[in-house]
Length: 468
Image (cartoon, rainbow, N blue to C red; front, side):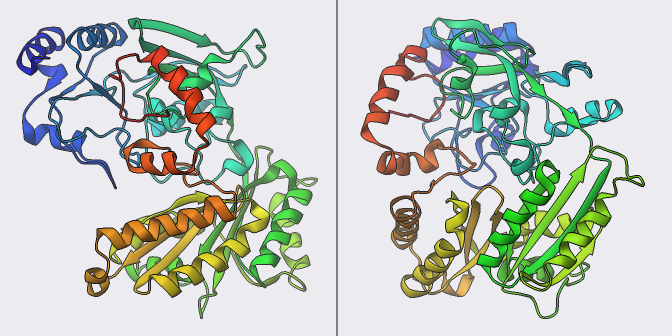
């Protein structure tokens, strides 16, 4: 490959507004929000699908590797280039906008570069929303590539469960456009090919648009921050909330004392919900799209449920406006970043094993990695845990790269081998998790991927995630 020749062809195809070559202008695209920082040959920003298809044909002919990128909010480096200076970042940010909304079918069709906030802004006048709840504002393509979940997965499922159809560009043959599914809710006519493009970080093709399931906007919401008598009592509360509220249970989040304390340290304008802070708290939310009325008042039902459990499972509770309590929850990640060097874990175990896992994981860190402080929180409703650690500046000399890697491996071994959990519950694989994928994925599964992935990308030109 001639980098100079490739740049000349890309310039001719995309023009000055579609190609970024200056180092300073490339930087925001080359650095991920947490991991991933490399150097790209350039950033290609096609204006439409036809330009993106031609770009893929050009790169295939020149042997140039492409790194698909949406809003660049991912946390495993899947959208970041390596250090070679030879990869092209394919940014979908200009291929954006809502194509169509069908309130009767309850769907929204949008281009891949469309942001989550734009989806919900377009849906709101129709009384609808796309209910993936995240701290970031990703693009449609990025959400599909990572199979995003979020805090309300217990009610609405992940992106995979809310995708009816999508369109993607293939690398083999280069630039071919593949339509998979449509806005039908029922379509059992063979393999569901779109699933190959969801959760695979753009390694099978580049999503250009999607048809997504929309949901009615909640008209009633009731939220409480609850202190359980124990973590086991918290599981009983979860089980009972699902039995009592069924689909009205929207979220069931866990927040440790350290995580709450970090928020209060770095957001002094936020009042402490408890004094003293409990060892663990649960953020519980119920919601409904039905209007409150004489025969159905969700707030009253929720209050009655809380009062009923004060005798057995609840020690204390704060009932407040949903936005107030969710502000505490959504502020955790940014607050913990200010505590020191972050060692983050996006993991999941069976819900029934969450208390035992947490106890054993805390003991492991205290015993073998003293100096690393745990600020854990996460999605108890679906078994997801952000078991994040922060190493204060004074302790960082005790944690060279080798010891941090030993910490990661020890904790992942506990999650996967002892608790049969996942080392990546939401964030995906990407370069950051690639060697853990190799460590924990069954050989038969990798062998199958080794046969399938080359069908879509025989020359390994697409993305930076390998499933073989």
